[in-house]
Image (tube, rainbow, N blue to C red):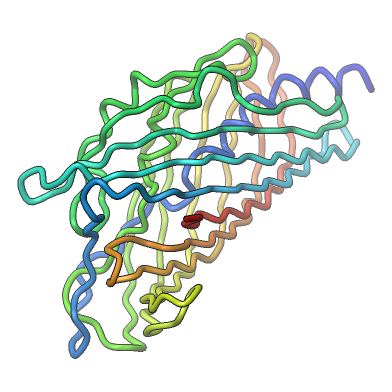
Length: 292
């Protein structure tokens, strides 16, 4: 049994390693009708680099044939964003990947570290004034070696990187609810799902001496992720709940910090070559923040 547990752990960890670099904020906050306070909008200063770091921790518990198995995954991504100016009514942003690292600690052992060949890679994206990514196509050309002999790309790094801002003018305490879908495909994974977000504009708060609009969100939904690893077809699915806190600085024209916490309770199903199913509980915490 121990050998089977170790093999299973090594095989599926490539899947859960990828989860740590997929954005967990794939939802929109759209069209609240408030008043009194000016509308929020992205406006990164042209040719001024802004550095971010994203740290993600995943604690994943499975029951494999009556044996508990806990996996711990930590990832770190450093990015430099620089506005190249307007692209019509949107903005072109140059993205430089400064560093990308990931470690996994499982019953099968500890492995990971800096991901080779990714540091220094550069590509451009287009974002709207409210933070939606309009064009992320260049990210497909930025690839790196992933687990189990696969290849990942940068699409999942920036696809939902920016907290999406509410439209219109707001006043402190305004609340609104949105419903959205999750639809993400990379060379290794396909993710589908739904998300309901109950949002509150909390007003303005100082963060590191900068006045920021604070938006809190309580989220819930379902997620289905499919991948292949070492000849196995793997599906992870289940409902999740969580919270998101975002800080946007109107004076700088960009977000300063976002904190995400989620818990998914579901199953892992292996459908080929042999059918197996295991209960799964996964706790995810992530922080994106400006570091310069």
